[in-house]
Image (spheres, rainbow, N blue to C red):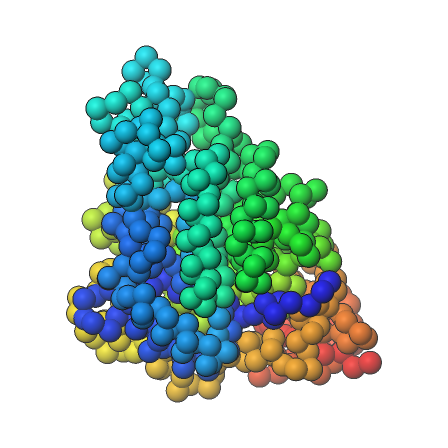
Length: 556
């Protein structure tokens, strides 16, 4: 595989609303990101993905864009972004932005004009259809619940919104619309950003020929996913998008795409694929607090291991995954993967070692490096996210009590990952001098950056060591380009693999359990990382303590 500039990136996702506030309005902003660049540089980060900061009414926290060309005043100005790009570049950090081009906000001028004249020029920018006998064009369910169609007042037309009612889907069949999007993308690249995380791109092609489908829920609606995710023909748009924008600037693109058929994988992320990389979502529905895995954390981690290893074997030599454990759309990884009573330094430091040395681009989410977790709310009113409240109402309609519905929300709501960043033990965790837009986790006095910076045995310091090892000049090429071989696969407690390149062998051993475990194979080598003070061996086999994580360099 031809080496490219982005292959060795270490990513860090910022949810700007919750990162750092500098003007005391309780909302994080771009100057706040600039203020924390030295911290991110010291951590070893080389790429920052910033969630949407464009003008927006914030019905879906910025993923409903009303003006693609301007930064929303709550976050700062276009000039602030330019300064961020420049300051980050001085520290060897690339800035990538969210690119949301499946839909706009209903407040976007294009949509406002479409509503005035559904059959006019801008009506063709969106997916508008006449209703049938006073009903929507079909019974698709929105991904956020309820009908995916909303009537345009004073007309016979409905508009499609796969997400919230405030996010009308764009009509990619319209070449004029596509050209407008390409110009916008190129303008941001001209400013100097290094690329994009591309939101919901798998949905830009729709098959509207299906009509009503058999209901799959008490609401009489149907998910309809196969008619608006990775629909045949989407490749034509993806190829054009790349050629008209990304390829011109040799930028980095990270796509939110799942369920790509294996035979299409190389077209998407091969050497000349539509994108640089995609997320590996195979673990995102695993939650030991909820659903099929409730109370089964050991079995769940084994299933995650098997899925991740299977994906890595299929991917080898064909492209790069973006490997992550946390993001803004799911609860924090300690709560997803570990019961509260099992959360400690060893278990929390074990988690990143699982994925950090896999082939691909590692991505952290703000606060992951200090062990931030969620906290359960006592009232549904303590949540603000529209999707959270929609889910709560859905649980009530399914027959849950208010107590049961709130419990499920506490275990599953993405807002648990959106609490303000915990910088110190001062007021509001150092996030803001004003009233934060969302409550700070009460544990901030013991879990915060300042405290962990002063403790050489902290989780933050361990993450710094992981990143330093990933970037180490002696081992970096192997971590990036080396082959992947699973080890100890017959164990139901171990997560182990080897990376090899040019005769160099690096081995990763993770004990996923709270018990001592002995490897079946014999291993020896130089210890590069160990979350315990020592590594025990017996007759050549490794004796791993509860949640012990070790990386070895095998001597040739």
